[in-house]
Image (cartoon, rainbow over all chains, first blue to last red; front, top):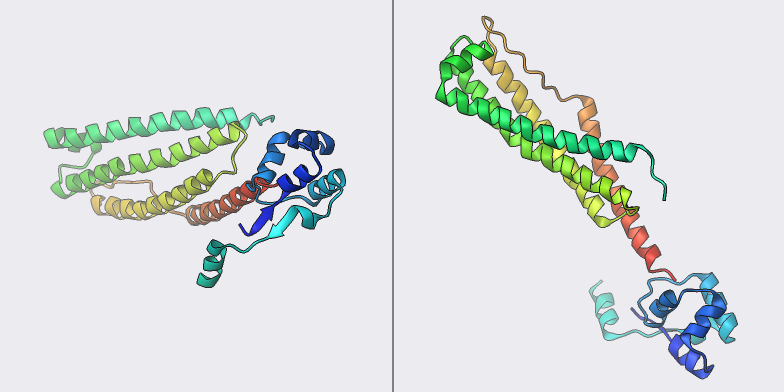
Length: 78
Length: 169
C-alpha cells in the first residue's frame, strides 16, 4: 500500500512507547501494533484524533503517501 | 452472543436429514440391485405388470435417485457447516458465500433432474398400470434458486465488509 504509517518515528521523537500510547488513547496494544506495522486496512477518524492529541502531532506527521514501484505497476496496468 | 432456539433445531434436523439421504440411497440401491437379480418379483412388487420397458424406466429412475443422493448430501452438508459458523458467532465469512453459491448450483441441477424424473415417470406409466411419480418443479423452486444465488452475493459482500472492518483500527 502506498500509505505509510510513521507512528514509530513520531513515537521515537516523543520518547514514548507503544504501550504508553495504547494506555493513553484507550486502544489495545494489538490494534496499535497493527497500525504501526502498516497492516491496518483503515483508520477511524476517532483513533487518528486520539493519537494526534496524545502525541501532539498532525495526521500528516503520522501518514505519508509514498508511491512504490508495485503500486505504480498496478496503476499502469489499470 | 445469544442464539435463537432455531439453531439447535436446525442442526439436529439437518443431521437427521443427512441420515435419511443415505438411508434413501441404500434403499434405492437395494431396489436397483434386486431388480437386476429378480426382475419378476420387483415388477410385481412395484405393480408394473411385467412390462420390460417399465422395468428399464424404473431402473433409470433408480439410477437418477442414486445420483441425487450425493447432491442432497452436499446441499445439507453445506447448510450444516453454515449453521456451525452461525453457532460459533462468525457467519459472515467467504466460505459461507461459497457454500451458498454451491447450494444454488446444486438446486439448479436438482431442478433440471426433476424435469428428467417427471418425463421418465410419464414414460413408465401406461394406462393398464399407471405409475405416479410425485416430482414437480414449481415456480417456488426456481425462486429458491434465484434467492440462494442472491444470498450468496449478499454473503460475499458481507464477508468483504467484515474483513475491512477487522482491519480497521
